[in-house]
Image (spheres, rainbow, N blue to C red):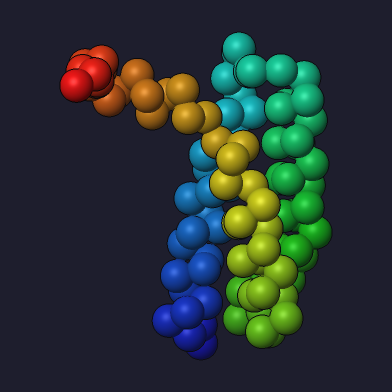
Amino acid sequence: MISNHKRQLHDRIRARRARLEAEQNRPQRRSSEHARAIDIALAQLEMHLAGNWDDVDDNQAAQLSAWLESTRFLVDTAAVEEFLPSMPPTVQE
């Protein structure tokens, strides 16, 4: 049975993978370096997830948490920004 901590980690990994795959499939990626970084991150994840989630030990959970941290800047922030309202310029006092 998967512990609550592992279930949360699993959910975060699935969400990040989905966002990276969506970014990977976008017709206009930011740069070839960005595209390569996403490809590498997804390949690393596949290596980490070779087994079953029930078999993930504390060491593997730590590695997956580190993967989450290292990939947080690879997701598309521009897509988020287009849904945010424009902020008025700050007024100098």
